[in-house]
Image (cartoon, rainbow, N blue to C red; front, side, top):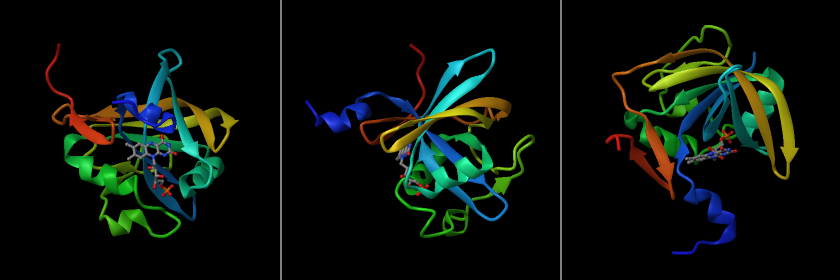
Length: 162
Ligand SMILES: Cc1cc2nc3c(=O)[nH]c(=O)nc-3n(C[C@H](O)[C@H](O)[C@H](O)COP(=O)(O)O)c2cc1C
């Protein structure tokens, strides 16, 4: 089935990150896709809409955490992707449990498959989005959990190896 051109990006299966960011005064969490771009240095990219609170906070903090969503967090991913930090404190609203990260001030969401602590190296403005290139400065993985992927507006558990 052919989709509208603006929806063509949804055809690409993507990672599901619960991106958290905090400054001294504010914090926020949103659902985002991230892409790994380099191993040495370990670099990732995320593209963040300019009008949302997460964008303001990344601009101020220069860092964020990518919490790799586990299969238990698909519902949370939907909620964080459909609500706005300018209108609510999502951590309180969705009763999100956090713990301190090792090398950044943004929080880790408990129950995530993994977390990547990121510091912004540079950014690129394009249309309504800013693309952030960030270095992973610390990370952790919970191998007892399973990550999810996103495709055409649905979440899928990663499972069978082919
Ligand atoms: C699976 C999924 C992936 C998303 N990826 C991005 C993304 O990469 N960049 C972005 O700006 N918004 C993305 N969004 C939308 C944001 O999560 C959404 O706009 C969110 O409400 C922003 O939160 P905030 O207003 O608290 O900053 C995604 C949503 C979903 C459900």
